[in-house]
Image (cartoon, rainbow, N blue to C red; front, side):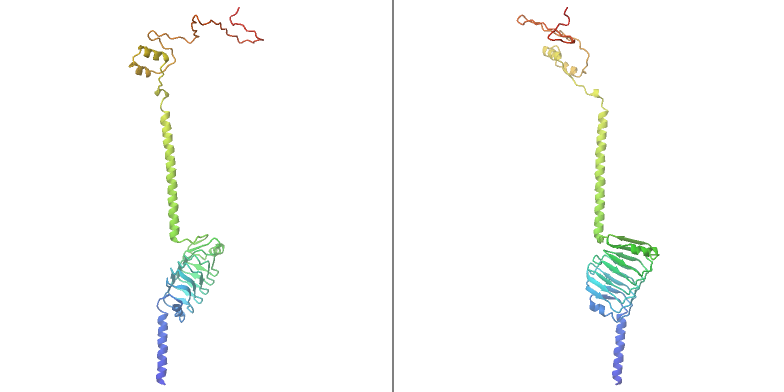
Length: 325
């Protein structure tokens, strides 16, 4: 009988030691069976990390305090994280880049001694911490949230940044700012597209390139305009007399044909500017004035008398020469 009692005591002691070891070191959860091993721990002394290979819903039961951190990053198949009994986390909570995550349930959480960071979860539309009162570090909530609820929040010592979708209302959170809940800066904005940092960087680079192209185009247009203005200025400074047109009259052509002007003198005469003054006779050529010139009729041509009419009124068919007696 004594031996049986000793065996029972030894088994109980080994179980207590095993439970103590399970609650004192950090652990990585890859499935629900790993999470069930923590159900005997009211207080977990280490950190709990959700493996990137985890899928489905993970529920952490009976754990009320985590002295380390609660971390889940890059688990693209994780759809839900439930910790209904969790009251406080000393090392902070980080839940980021969980593409399939739709549900976070931590209804009893009241204090986070470090930061609370929930970012990069495009399918997480509703976020609420009904009993959360104090965050010692930063509060960073960024995603496609339609609503963010923090009704019991009393103090955030770090900087607060909250970004949600266009349907999220910042007015409720602005009331917390007016009550001096946010001690080190506060920003709330709606209308987030939920883009990844890489996509945002690509958009920024595209905008910079577009601006540079526009600047280059404007520079090219202004340069062309300046060149045109300079060309017009140079043309306007050239005097009209710098270009002389040479006109060879009929009499000079006749003289050239008759040999009075040598072909060597023709280029020299072509450089002479054209004037309106009467030219002197050259050789035997006779220049006529600008008055009327009558051709001498020959014998076979009948002579007709022409009379100019005055400018007075003409009655009926009456006509008379100007110099008529």
